[in-house]
Image (tube, rainbow, N blue to C red; front, top):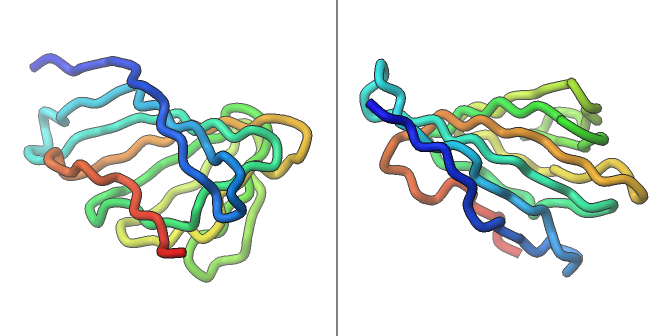
Length: 132
């Protein structure tokens, strides 16, 4: 079985404040050969200074592991306290988790993270933004 490695056009999302949101780039997408019906999708998420994502959930099947590659990211999942993760630190999201805050913790420096998603292979909608 061959796994596909490719870069796609970046995806931009508008934040609730009308400021251009994060840049998401799919860097890997491949079926898990030992777990029928499941795939791994890897994305980079880049935040310009002061930028945040719209509150969201992910595909119902999604388990997510994220590690901060550069800068610092503020995150609040479900009703847990908001936390700041710095380069080299990581967090997870379980299926059904509500990502209430995902933002660059700095107003002057960029931030970047790597998100690894384990999802149903046929899943197309990886992010479901909250209604405004």
